Structures are given as C-alpha cells and as structure tokens.
Length: 252
Image (tube, rainbow, N blue to C red):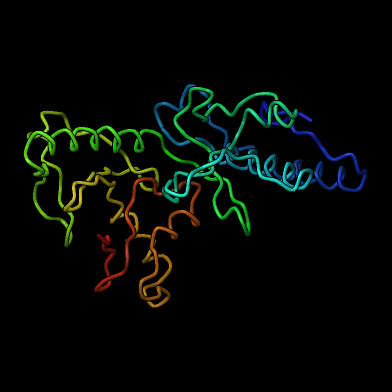
C-alpha cells in the first residue's frame, strides 16, 4: 500500500492486514488537512505532522515483523537526543518504504528522524539539523579560540549560574540566526565554564512548565522531557534543565 509517497507493507495475516489498513485510512483522514507542499519546507522549517506519523507506522510494523527497531547504532557517549537515527536504508532494502520522507536529511531535508524511548515505547521524533550543525560549528570555533588563548573561553555575559552568552566578536564569526522549532522564536546559544556550547531552550521550557503546572514538576526532574514527549521534536544540544525558584535553569 502506498501512502504519502511511502510504500507501507501490510502484514500477511488477514486479520492484522485489515486492522493495519483500517488504521491507515483513519490516519489519512485525520491528517489530510495538515500536509505541507514540499516547496514550503525550507521556508517554514517544520514539516507536517504526517511526516512523523507515517514513519512511526512503518517503524511499528517493522518491529512487529522482526522484533527489532530499524535504527542505526550509536555509542554510549552519544547524547540522549542525538542517538538512534532511523535507518531508512534498511527500511528500503526490506521493502517497507519506497521513497524517503522529504523532510529527512537523507532526502535533502532539514531533519534526522530519531527513535526515542526505544526500550519501552519507541517513538519517532525529529532532530532539527540546523540547530545541531550550528552548535557543532560554534563549538569548533570555541575550541580553536581556547587553543589559541591559553584555555580562555569566548564568553560574554552570564545568563545562568555557570552559563554564558557567546562573544562572537572574539570568535570573529557571525552569530547564527536560529529559530526554535517549538515556538518559532529566536533560539540563542550559550556555553558553560568549560566552553561547551549548547542551545538555550529556557523560554520554550518555561511555556512547557506552565502548561503542565508548576506543582506537577518533581525536584531535579529533567525538563527536557517535556519538550521531547510533548512535541514531535527533540531538544537537540540542550543541557539538562531543572526547575529552580519556579524557572528552568540549566545544570553544569
């Protein structure tokens, strides 16, 4: 069966085949008003929800058939929200999809499709490559600055305890213009006292905390989960945040 330019192989078992086809029909109707023209992806930087839903369906089917998840291996040192990228090559080789999602990096899009909560309830999410690459680029510049300046870091004003804005003048580079995938607002970068560069999701987390309710947040709860589980996107390159004095504060 072909849906949203993706070939989905239905189970051979007649009962499961009927259920899968029925679920696909319902999902198609529910998402029919949410589709983005391909040419608008670059402008909006946010694909339609069916981009995630269709890949989720294929991942679920692959796991049912094989008992495995179609994901690339990652080392133990890979950050939580950067690991387990969906292995589209494997899905194509085994005829679970015919074409790659237009939003995927492998197709020239702006996102990696990643699998989170892989052990209990695997969920497909999107990793924004623009933010991922910008942090890596500024990290490389920061490391170069440290090497050439006796270990000093190119820090600016302090924004949180142990975290600072980046002095781009010291790096002789232009500040990247980034937008939050959660709000569309400006997304700035910061660094810790060792010069490690992060994206600052403080304002996005504040909205997520207010939506959930301050009283529902546990002490030392990793607030990044609110964004990862409550949206289609992972907070890539974010440090751990705790709620301190009713505000999200990154932890060194």
